[in-house]
Image (cartoon, rainbow, N blue to C red; front, side, top):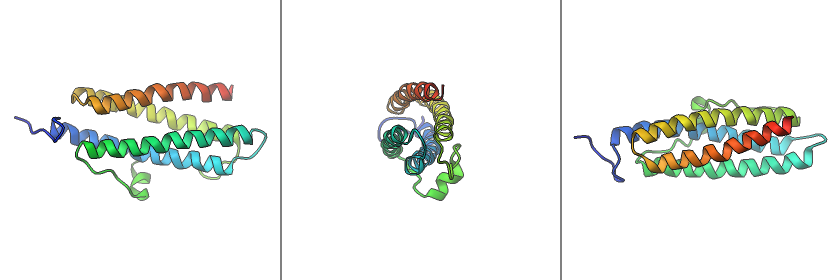
Length: 157
């Protein structure tokens, strides 16, 4: 008989989900810092609208960073918390010295595409483990970010 964790889920499957969530957490941290950097460094004709939009985006990302870390803890794992670990594990690259609006939006769009793909994979993994909490979180993120991707693509024309 397989062991279960404190919330009644298969321990081995939960450990696998924790690994996936830690990779996702790393990606979120890099996406967050990219958005924060765009907010700080954006220049040009669309400064005012992009400055505000990037702030909205990084606040949404920061909220999810906290939720993912807390989900990892709920599953009995430990969230990674060193930036060196984020850089090593992330599937999203750091964006440096981007001050132009189109490039910043394209970078965020690529990052969100990566996040959505990863979240779909975790959604499947969580479903296979009967982990409704993680599945629900991923489903909510996917729905929200699919709309954001549409909006970012519309902004780019």
